[in-house]
Image 1 (cartoon, rainbow, N blue to C red):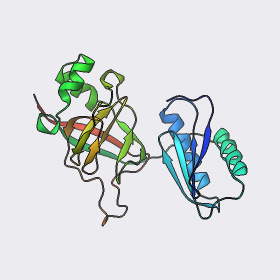
Image 2 (spheres, helix red, strand yellow):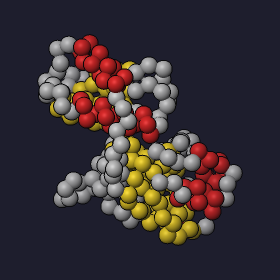
Image 3 (cartoon, rainbow, N blue to C red):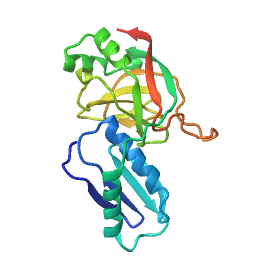
Length: 219
């Protein structure tokens, strides 16, 4: 989604959402990271959580002057420079197709590519982690080749397993746990993305990157 101006909205009484203008790019997301780091130092902010081209703030107590907070966010956004985070690169072995990739045929039909071409285009990039969300440990990734972009499913799947590698529109991602999904699952990985006993519990953080390694292709 592209917007000409930033938007600001309240989420109940204890949170607010700042949505950045313009297209969703790595440079824009790096500015979101910079804005999050700055806002986290403000005394009224409990937590600054970067999302995809947006920033959610939760508050220690509801601000009395939301207009002043909105103006401050807009000013800081204009000053924000892309924040280069030197994160880890995680390689994920993926089995493409078969029972773990039940929607590969739908991606092939939509794109007009072969299975091998879809796998090659999907596994070639280094995918930056833009943000975490949706469910614990889930990563929103940038960098997918537009040639394999496939619309989300008209009828969502009630449950896909953890480790499902999927395409939804112009994005790809890996489910960190079992749950419903409207994305097209093309493969699977055995990686554990969230463990409450680990510190930190989430395997990946914004600024890290994922590389998909082809373990097998099942036709």
